[in-house]
Image 1 (cartoon, rainbow, N blue to C red):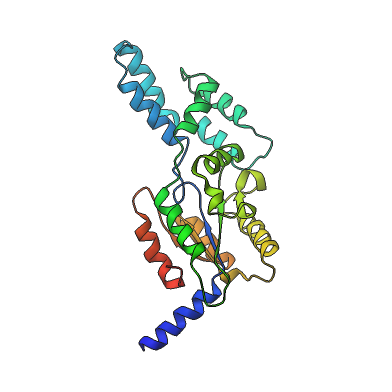
Image 2 (tube, rainbow, N blue to C red; image 1 turned 90 degrees about the horizontal axis):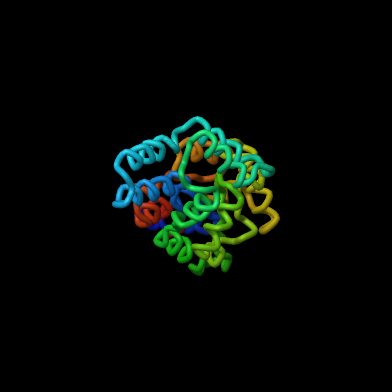
Length: 246
């Protein structure tokens, strides 16, 4: 039985050709919520501001991420290529009277960006591991994200040193977001351009949201759920082991 299991694992290892990852929640932290948390913490430590004024600004920051205008702006930002980052902040600032200027918010959101080094290193090991078929696994990204913010993440974390740039699928650029089937179709088109003849069941996808995992599975990909906010890269490695990737 052990030999049979090993043979099955090796067969599956040869079959998996692509590892596609979510951005926020898997490979990266989530914004703008992390930015608002950062501003909130800085404001709490401000000893020069009057207590009443500080409390007013803290209350604004507490509600900023859940404000309907913020949610509406994000829904448009992640799918509309013509909706710029400046337009997003303008809509948010009109609804939530933040004290920061637009430029300060643009700087702060990038300051709060983080690429999870442990996950990126795991992906690096997977893509560099030799296999019997001499075809290494290629990593890509399928992320609901703003094109400008995503580019800043890639630059800040040197993501393109591990993830294939041609397979970075950003929802705003593509005009469709998960869990819509359309984004998986567009990602698969990119995969097949990169390696013609690739089948859907030769792809493993990782996402922190169950609805996106199920959508990927319905499309024909293998998919696992993983949330870096509450788990480590070791948990992800364990979930990828059945596919012969770790």
